Amino acid sequence: MLAMMQLSRNSCNTRVSVRVIKFKECIKPVKVEKKQGKSVAKIQIEDDGSYFQVNQDGGKQKLEKAKITLNDCLACSGCITSAESVLITQQSHEELYKVLRDNKASETEQKVVVVSVSPQSRASLAARYGVSSSEAGRRLTSFFKGLGVHHVFDTSFSRTFSLLESQREFVERFQRKEQDRKALPMLTSACPGWICYAEKTHGEFILPYISTTRSPQQMMGSLVKGYFAEQQGLNPQQIYHVAVMPCPDKKLEASRSDFYLNKAETREVDCVLTSGEVMKMLEEEKMSLNDVQPAPLDTMFSNVIGDEFLSHAGSGSGGYLHHVFTNTAKQLFGEEVKELTYKTLRNKDFQEVTLEKDGVVVLCFASTYGFRNIQNLVQKLKRGKSPYHFVEVMACPSGCLNGGGQIKALPGENQKELLQKVEELYKAELSQAPEDDTRVSELYQSWLHSVGEERARELLHTQYHTVEKMTNGLVMKW
Image 1: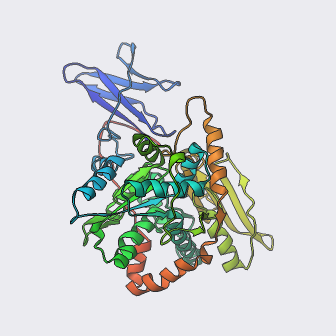
Image 2 (image 1 turned 90 degrees about the vertical axis):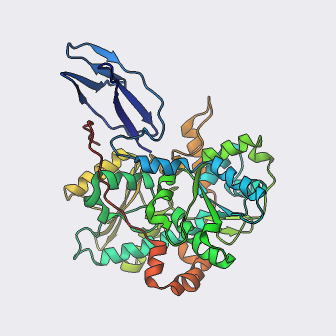
Image 3 (image 1 turned 60 degrees about the vertical axis):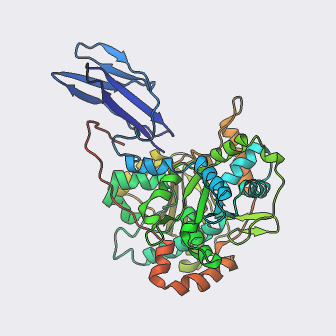
């Protein structure tokens, strides 16, 4: 999530108040003049982040911060709209509990409840409870099924589709780069915070660069409400699909109209819970994950060997750069890249990887995390100065393992040390190359080829839309 500021006026006087919410580091700097009758109230931000009302006589009045609801958030439309906020309020662990209660109350109109857990959330919960990531996955399976959930899947499985489709899309773009000046760089699309920013801030300029490949969450949405529903003989509306994610922005992603099945009248992902919300569920049940007995894993949509989960090589944000780089190097240039060498540029969240052939750089990739680095990337694109063919873009500093929905350090704990522990647990899982997953290959043949090329593209890809901002009194610059 980003940050917001809202100005409101008391109709009885000229007092101006500022409401502030800060989900991450991103703050929209603003100096505002608010006309109220014949007088003008100025709002300014001090270096320490305090907000002041500056009167015409030069006097200053410090403004208090106020709690807000999602309906208040971002009057400027820079992050979420009021319509989106309504959809977000429908996504909480209370909603999951309601579905589970309704299932117990009625034998005739039960929902099949499916929970898909991200590897980043597994690692976050594993760090909190002092177990391995795979052990956390087995215990979460047991916990959810004990509540009445029917199936628990792993989004590393659906991420295999995302990585394979990203690779195919990149090669296609690379081969037509001479005819289409906006074919490259290809910018990853798995981060909804970044997509929200792109659609609402840079619109038509930036959208052609963004990969159309679905995120692992929405790939799993296709699998669960498509293939799984067919295999179970169910209407998609009979399935209640929950995704456990490291980021609250994933709630926004699930709410997009592009991921709504009009014919079945249902979303592909009905509810998104963050890692922190799952921990809250455990606390409300007066349970520790350590007290939960592990359960066998559901293997239909899970990357596992025995009782151990499999992940992908590369970053904790999915390994997009790693997979696309190594496979493109081999496919287009005949180069077998065993290990990537990252060059840190501005900071640890802006890194570069290149491939040289005969003394010439033929591939130039980058990972860009955090909005400051994203802004620098966009400005380079606008000036025609970007040297990159592919960029792994994530809104959160340090990427998805540091997502806004991950479990935070307890009082007295060090947040950086906790993040390092999460990273170690995440990387401790065995990695599998996407192209080596035979079950995914089988699904390409048995499921996707059977629905036709156009339908297969619809199930694995998406589209983006320029979102016009509402007119208001705020003058803001990212």
